Image (tube, helix red, strand yellow):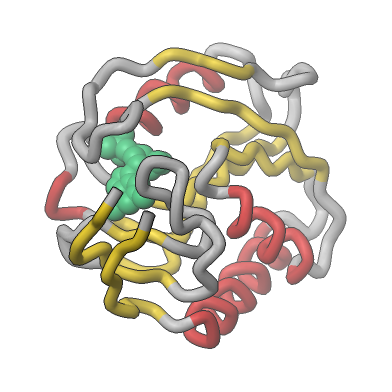
Length: 176
Ligand code: 5GP
């Protein structure tokens, strides 16, 4: 399986941005009980880099939701495939996302987590495609706004491929 790709954001640009975001998050959560909730699987690479760049301690937990299946359009149907291991009651929760597209996934997730009584709930995303937004949702922290193109690499996949690419790339052609 191969694909032609074009680099949109280099690994150096991403690393610099992640450090900037980590500094802001560290400042905002200095005296708080921070829990990073990573949305599997795409956000895993971002979570790891963010966590390692924080100047404060943080707990981590994971959720898996279905939004896309194997197609590259949002179904609007969100199903929890893996729930958090622990309660978030009275925790300062920061949802860690790879990319916000229509916002439908995150919108559902936010309402779901808010019903569990966290002390606070914010969203950090590495990437945002604001042009495609359907749900009324904005991230509290955002790395890059990108154009409406399908991207892979830095943890993001197309049919479970391309996650390993260190740069963020636009997928131009794909051959199974
Ligand atoms: P939303 O519900 O905001 O439309 O979709 C969010 C999810 O769709 C992301 O967490 C990601 O898994 C997937 N997604 C949206 N845009 C892209 C993209 O350009 N590339 C990849 N690989 N996944 C995307």
